[in-house]
Image (tube, rainbow, N blue to C red; front, top):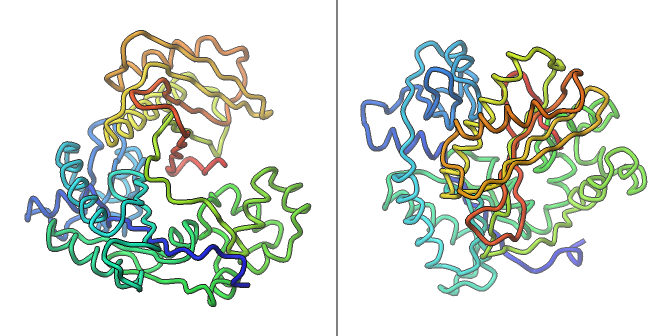
Length: 364
């Protein structure tokens, strides 16, 4: 079994409720209270404190829905400059240990500490030191996952959240994955999880019992990914120069939409979320693409490219409505998505961001 794994030590560090925790740290009056960053009258939640999450408030949820779930919710305007400032401090701590740091966003990153600057043998010890330094320098807590690859480290970082860490040792990988619920596998969204449930696949051991051919038939190209990761095989390296090629938000609906007002509301929410994701990573782009998937699963995309960078969600909303008017069919819509490309970064690798709110499921 061990021969399947590259000899690497990977840490996934994930800040705990980052935006909300920053606001609670900087404003003591907010500590211990249910808060949401973002929102506004018709906006969406960018982040929720753990106190708010207890009521079902989640990021990307419309503020109206968040208020219904948690009437005493306090909305706080985002301060992206502050979040970026703290993120830089956190990354400086990472670089004290290794240059192999792959940021996923302002609040999480992969670190390859197989060879590290402090010659520390234990990746578990490195993760403890990093989390302690983050707390000492920022007053914020972080969680960490440690294992032999990125997939396992990512799964592990969620297990003892908040303010904890989990190591999955090579000799325990097989047993760990066999007992792991399939919905906990990184890369298995709600739609896929529900499909697996109907097939009698509830845990890793159920997934492992399926052949590669069977999984490919059932899940297409994702089948090979599921076949490998349930066996602990995930050879993607930590890429320190990971650069976004495009940013996308998508929404799949439980009930197909046909009403024009509903469509406009969804396009507005998507425009706001796309803008927030861009602000979060200090990214601008010139080409906006609308994606429509119909009830019969037929797909339509149409793009608009301009000479200047988009700078506001209102611009996204305006153009997305124009692109919507170019649709070929007036039939029920199953999915809407917006993506921005031609970014102010080198084009290297696409990152897709999925939204999750009460009326949606993840779309793989």
